[in-house]
Image 1 (cartoon, helix red, strand yellow):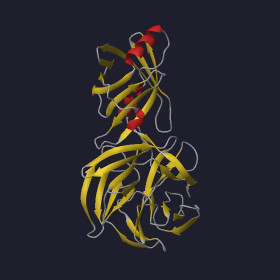
Image 2 (spheres, helix red, strand yellow):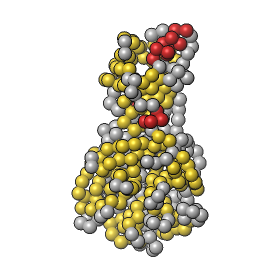
Image 3 (spheres, helix red, strand yellow):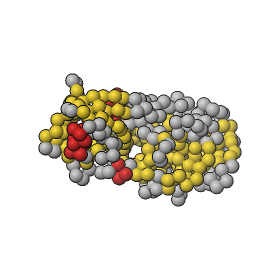
Image 4 (cartoon, one colour):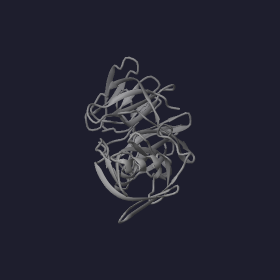
Length: 340
C-alpha cells in the first residue's frame, strides 16, 4: 500500500503555520493581537500561499501546488519576546516538528528567520478563510471496505467496485443501497479500478500497465502499453483512460483504441484515485478531494471529509463516493455530500 511521505519543505511550512497564537504573557498577547488576520507569502517558500492567524490560539497555513491542488495545516504557537516557537503535533500524516524563529514586524510586513531560512509575508485583508480554501464534505452513508487496504473505487452504472491491494485475489462488487458484496477472482493486485461498459480496467501491484478485465469472469482481455509504475488511479474519459503513476508522479492519457499514450503531464504533488464527472477530473491528493479542469490541468476547488484521508473517488451519476480511512480501523466506502 502507498506510504504517505511528508517532504521536509512541507514540515517547515507547517511549522510556520503555527507561529502566533499562544498567549503566555502580556507581550505575547499584544503581539498576537497585532498579528491576527490573513498573511500572504511573498518569499521564502514554494507552495505556501496564505497564513491565517486567529485569536483563539490557532493558526492555519494554506498552500497549493503548481496544478493548484490545495492543502492546509493547523498549528499551536508560543510567542515570547522576539521569538516564535512553532509546535506541530503528530498526526496520521505528519511528524512532530518544533521550530524556533526570530521575527520582525514592520508595518504590514512580517519576517521570520532562522540561520538558513528567511520568509516574508504581507498582511492581506482579502486572504481566504480556511473554510473557503478547503470546503467540508458530509458523510451521508457508509460501509466498511471489503478488505483492509485503501484502493480506488469506480461505479459501473449499477454497482461500486473496489480493488484488493495485497489482501486477496478478488475484486469486489458492492450494492450502493444494501451494501451487499460479491467478488470476482482476478490475476491483478489492483490498487486502481475503472468501469468501461461491460468490463473493468485494473492496475496491478507495481506494474506500469493496466488491464481490461471481464467483470463477470475476471478474465484479462487486453493489457496496455507501459506507462509509469504503481498506478493508483484510473479515470475513464470517452475512449481515453487517465492513469496516475505514483512512481513517476505523472499523469498519462492512454488511448484505449490505439493502445498509445497521447499525453503525459508532470505533476507537482502525489495523487491517488481519480474519477471523471461533468467534464472535470476529480482527484484524491493529500487526503483531500480536488476538482480539476483538464485543459489546462488546474484545480478549481478542494474538499475534505473531517477525520478521514480520502484515497479513492467514484461518481454514480448523482452523488460522489470515496474510499477513505482514519488513523486506525478498516477503510470505509462513503457517500459524501457537499461536492460542487
